[in-house]
Length: 261
Image (tube, rainbow, N blue to C red; front, side):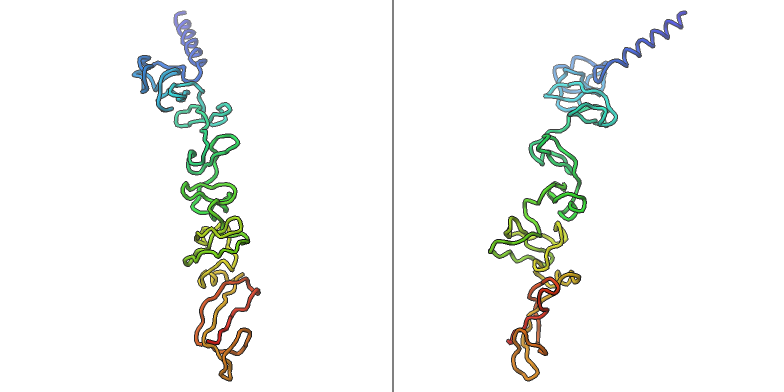
């Protein structure tokens, strides 16, 4: 009979414990209620205890405005209520992060203005890599994929301004924004899409696009068979040297521009 009572008593104790939600199950030293830190007998502070971060609160709790608050245990995000997600390291529901700027979100996530929370996007090193993953551009400073167009400019787009673009180093093209050149350059390999042929300023870059681009050259010291100087449009000319002039779409221009000098 005593054994039966003992079994019933233990069952009632465990049933009572199982009904306690979140971090209210706590056996620590309540003397730490005056400040943060871990109680001497438990894994953290229970609700109402002061804290400096979630880690100082018991499992099932989070730190809200310097005080531990209860949100419940979890294994995955769907175990938590709206506005909360699962901190799997503590098996505890914690509030979704809030933000007003992308910089407040972790790399690989951006601030959603509609919800005020950080949403996962993807990681990247360039616009090209971001576009391949379905994003609009890459915030290289954060290594994060972003929607829309790069605010710094793009490698593609129609130019409607009369201001000339900058002279870029080999392997780079001028950036464009709102129909004008920005004055900055970007590596071709980092562009959101292949630049148009006439955006390629160097011979090696144009020669790398033989499927759709043609190199245009200036001929120097060019003469006809009778020894007279060649002019643009002349044929059967011999030139002493050539220099790269431009890159054009195939079939859009002649492959040689001749000068008589």
